[in-house]
Amino acid sequence: MEHGIREGAITEMRVSLFITCLVDEFFPRVGESMVKVLRRLGASVEFDGRQTCCGQPAFNTGYRQYARQLGERWLHIFADAEYVVAPSGSCVSMVKHYYPELFEDDPVLRHRAEEVSGRVYEFSDFLVNVLGVEDVGARFHGRVTYHDACHTLRELRIAEPPRRLIRAVRGVEFVEMERADQCCGFGGTFSVKLADLSYAMLRDKMACIRQSGADVVVSTDSSCLMHIAGALQRQGIRVRTMHLAELLAMEE
Image 1 (cartoon, one colour):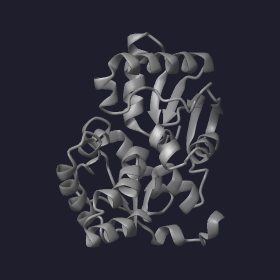
Image 2: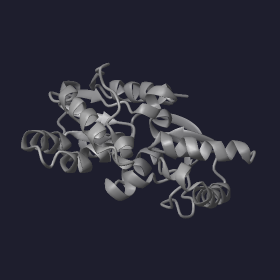
Image 3: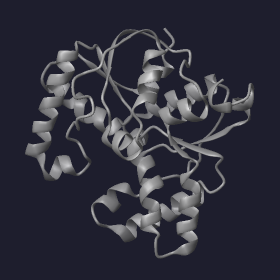
């Protein structure tokens, strides 16, 4: 196995799930798919039901005190986790990059945030760069394209791991869409505050998806997929959206 993971080591790993708000409320199948894949690989999966929002929406809209309260709670809940894995580059980026800033005036919490940041991973990054796995035993027959979620690509610098995982799925024909790295226009509250601009960006993304000829568009963030799925439905485009975890859980 790659990256120095010895045989049988995965069975010794304790993976704590960081289930994001959107997944918890609207896309629980994504979380279930993560569990299925990780257990298939032999990891011990844990879920702490006390977890709530990481504070990103409050942080991004200027409510820093509320974000601090949520962030402190998050740090307490995951303090003893060996690995923390989430189905969202956006929320992982919040913990890894913005918690140290959020707690910059509190040495204890800042140290705790910096320490835990090294144990928090986006799902595809964890599979490829920690477990050293690309073929997770998935099967799916269809033409699949990939949309780079902004935080996953630009803040976490994750581009190849999701593509490697998709290409390793038996039966998949992977095709790159044009401008795969172009934002879909969601951006959280951006799509509400600047709706016209958001829609123009989304319209461009729809054109690229259609031109790819794909049956399915996959991404690592449910927020992007929710935004894209709404446009696909409104325009009558028969392309499915699927989180990477859902694809990797398939066993046709």
